[in-house]
Length: 435
Image (tube, rainbow, N blue to C red; front, side, top):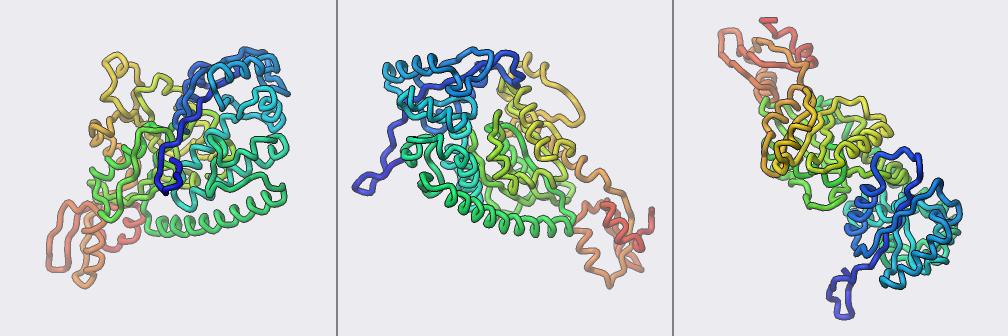
């Protein structure tokens, strides 16, 4: 949206874009070039572009100067003129020299997949931390390209690939960029300290954490809201934002829930993954994605209706590996099963750590929550305690924090039968009468 002279907001005209992909022979990819280009089209449309043409070039290797070769670049220039396209988006990350050379030949704005994803993130970031992380990623991406970007720097604020928090101009000297990077890193470090303090408090209270991870638009936020509905949660904590689009969630959300067995947990919604997720973004968002590393359980949400869901699972697993979180206890949650026909459903894998749900239609949610309880609280032990009447604080704690199955008032105290975590079992060992 742009603001006119009267202060009214009007919808900006969408940029016409041509997408360009390179199919390199014998290159080990998670997906076919056709599927990768379809995903690039989704990303481009999410950013606000209208895709008018898609070009796929088959080559044995990448051209170091023009990526697709000068001849193909000249063909694209003719296409731009014929289709009135003002933007060319490449499916891989380009060097500064390639960007400069391509812009000179194509005579249109040129960006790569990384710049496109960064642009979407720049549009979506809402919190201070999210904006700082996106700006850091943009600066780290553009720093080695300051010379190569050439004319594109003068387009800052002029369309897709040029936006950023505060619409800051990036046609500044290298020293200024480095100073800004250090400043942002310092601010993120302070935020990280606050997060660590909160994490330490949760650890002391022994409240487990559950992180939702998965491909973008797989339904993580919808699933989180449904879990909150089915488990008690503090009413002052709002549900998380949901929209059917790529990267609807950028800012990590924490919500406390209480399971049917009265055990508490913290639900964490995280940014969605995508193939070829820029390393600058992974690095910039590490302070946020770090929550995944410390989670007690991961819910790996998969869009069961996506024909490339196996590839998306591999991409998510690869990102988790980069975060050193691939060995975490994980329940793979196949979502959107209400949209599947019988043959698709049969083809899905089965297993103890796999669940099938429709978060939108509330299908399979009880089964999933039961699995979550089993994984998180598998160390629970049955115990019968006799608590002296003068220790009403212990009675209150057990009634509030555990699933009390029996409570009797006897001559020497309150008899309580319940299940305790290992730490509580050891803590109240002196009061246990039936071990």
